[in-house]
Image 1: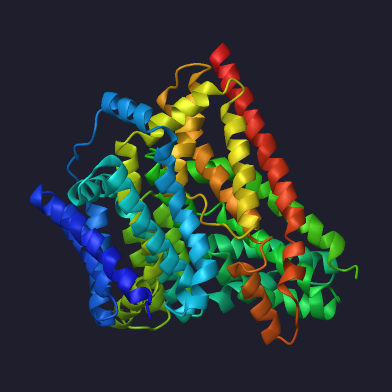
Image 2: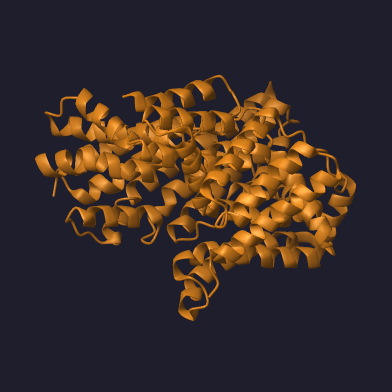
Length: 308
Length: 221
């Protein structure tokens, strides 16, 4: 049975290959940074947690010092224009193969018992990336070394932001262990007198957005806020509908996700991927939509949650 | 209460634009210490949680594919396609992508899209090419167009995926309610994601059309 470990091994090997190229070019900080990350991803299951933690500290220090990558040679604009004209829309094929295989694998693989059913989406995603890579290499007649160098060119342009989502997930773990959720929920509930049903709704939706803003993740906020306000007050005391409370409450949390640098995967990583000079540029674009939708969710819930 | 000091570190660190990696690690250590967890235990906890969340790193496996496609001219091809469609504007390109992203996510196809696979090689170049038809782009406007492409991807997937019955958040809610003795079906939950999905499309779609007007005014000035 294929589990996640194999995919972690391949991902780790890819980052190790990036690190090796960087070391050969004399970009030592980059080589060390991606080397540590490769070790964490590829061999994480075999490292004692304390050693992994030490490697995480090394990543943070190197990230703060600056990775100083060396430029990687790629094709010039004229060559690319020519290649684009000759390959045409076939160029989009490998990029579409990834989601197609992820989707098909998620649907079909569980029946085969070849893979761990709980991890089927991630395994399909990994398989999709590898198949797409094979197609792209054949189409462009590129060597494996070329593929590694082009991948490294992208990872250099993204830089430390590539490891931030995992770093924030780790911080979320520490927050949870320290009992952060109860403290924040207690503050929100304690600060506002919940005498009117509509006040409970407003506190809940804004609380979901605020707590998501802090944690960077609506999934972490929902159990805390629903247990603190949603179930005991909106559903219990005022007799609201648990379905509407939950569904619209979660979507209120998503409005918080649009606003926070803590949701690095969605907000900070794309700024790096698109090579924007302002790392908060994506959040700034999303902010008006997020506030309007938060208001809309609050009104939706206030109107419908108490009418069954 | 002291536990909240970690949040203060994060807010201060981000506000001062310090490197987020060092801010996050410092916040973890401060939070741990204020909850009376000793330093080595916090480092252990960080290591454990970082490794436990390795699944996030799998998405980076697409980097060599996208790098090769860029070498082969995928961005140039995306630009050429937009160049052929007379009616294409930045706002309309992104509106079409928003609709596609929302609809496919609502059908469970959340993998169709994403910043590395789709926005950087295809959508952003298309949006930029459409904007360049009005006037050459300065760096600030180019970055604004790119940021809008990333935002359309996020908003599309966030307010589309909950309409699908088997997405993580719907299952999380179902599990949470069940633990508290309330049994609901995923379908009930996903039906209540539809109103917000529609409002999200209308609100953000309207903003994208306003972006077109801003780009046009800039071209006229």
